[in-house]
Image (tube, rainbow, N blue to C red; front, top):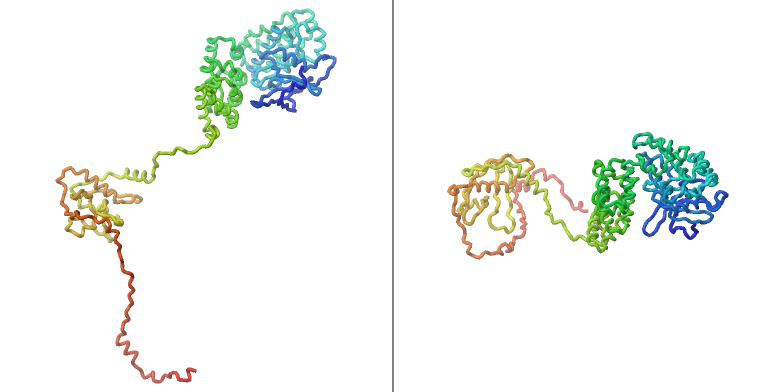
Amino acid sequence: MGNEQSQLAGLDIEEKAVEVSDFWSQHSAIICNSESTTSLTVFTGELLVSSKWSNQTPLEKNSKNLMIYRHPCILKYISSWSKNSKFYLVVEEVKPLNQILGTLNNLQICIGLHSILKALCFLHETASVSHNNICSSAIFVSSNGNWKLGGMEYLCKFSDVTSDFLNKSNSSRYNKAIDPDEVKNMQNNLDRKDAIDVYAFGVMACELLKAKNDDSLPSLSVFLSLCKNSLQNNAIAQRPKLSTLLNHEFFNHEFISIHSCLIVLALKSDDEKAEFFSTLGDRLKGFNEITVAKQLTGLLLSRMVLLSKSASTDFLPIFLNPRKEGEDQSKGLFTLETFKKYVSPILISIFSVRDAQIRLLLLNNFHNFMDTFTRDELKSKILPELLLGIKDTSDHLVSVTLRTLADLVPVLGASTVIGGKRAKFFNDGRPITHPLRKMSRNVKKQENVIETDVTSITSIDSQFAGVDLSERQMPDGEEGETSTEEIEHSVDGGDLDNWEDWDVENPQNQHSNNLEEFGTEQINLSPHIEVEPLGENIPVESTDIHNARKISTKQIVDITDLDIKNQLTEDLNDEFNFFQDMEPIIESTNKFVIPEEKEPELSELSSKLTLNATDVGEEGWGEEDWE
């Protein structure tokens, strides 16, 4: 067996035991390397030699048999070694069946029994050995839900099954699975050395299915009757071989057929594979999704399935598309939570596979299951593998990888996906919308159409009565007339002055409002406009009047209706002085007017100079008063 130097590098064994038996304790362990982390199971036992185990301890013999007899339904051996009076056996990650049996349904138990049955058929018919300790404690369940046969410490060849061997091992084997007449029957029927395992399998099947009395599985009661009456028959010759049970209708359930077909998929032809995968999606929808996920996910994502052309076109797009919340079952096999728990961990490990067809399959369906990964998983495990793909020599693989990276940008950010420094090279060239302009357009749309009468222009004052329009001041340096028309109102609310004809000879109209000027001809219009009262919040602008004039101008049909007069213009042949506005205007400084003193009136002056008789008697200041 192994030695101290065979210990796996980087193996970390948990101190707390998962299960403890008479010969060993089971522990969980992980092994870390530069590429990944793998979960394993380690059995540890004392290297004590007793009279019953003279050559090897039970754990050593179990390890040796697991290393020799390899089968998909037998516990997978990885490594073993001894150290400090202890022996270590490392196998695939498994859990004892007894710890999870209560969580399994009838279908899962049926699949498990079918796996153990195939393992026993391999041992009996191919290896010609007997297990001799078939019971629930010798069965383990892998991470993908498959049952694995272990407990190989009592395994021996058919030729070594003797009365002495059975007597020595009876005290350590599962008592209920031992035939009371086992030694006697073995002596009388030397050609049926497999009868020990047949009897034990019947007992175990009855114990596992005794509490499963519902009708969820076909022929359950018939199979239980077979296990009790035929497999445990006192007459060894009446016990059927275990290989005949594979054809029993209890194991011909549709789910079992799918499971078995996936195991032997490599032996199927291309036509058989195409037929199988074309209907596989609909067949799986008839079963519980948890059962499908636990039992079949590992097989459905095996290398053989991923490389199958018919599977990649007919089945895997359905399998790799989890249902969103509220969607019916036709959208996918699994819900988002089930997919995250059972499928996503396997997909992460598949991304490290260096196979172009498998990588393309994952990339083409990545947008469907991308949300099932956490941000850390996308960043630390998926993204490095995708970045490796863009360096490949295959243009097709690079292009598909780049599309997948584009899906990751909204989740991880461009800086994480493409790296490096970024700058803003593009701007938003869309026109900026102005809310005030939109409000102005809405106000104009709500106004009623203004009716105009070309023949009347004298009543323009009635529509603007009460509206105070201040006169627009002339800007500095402006020349000529303004383009907008203004209306003067009287302060006391009186009638507005009627507009007079625009004549150069009338100097009073130089500052009045004008119509638009067209060359040397001036059109004088007199529209009669009926305007509805404007809202309090809508200001009245001179441009509205100007628009009304334009509307009335467009409605003039006959040119004879226009009162056109020639305007006398000044001779502009002289050169215009562009600098006249720049001439300085010198204004006089402020003059301070000193008010003139008014001469006193004669009456006041005479009163001050007139002395009365009463003044004579008053005393004045004498010279002594100055002292």
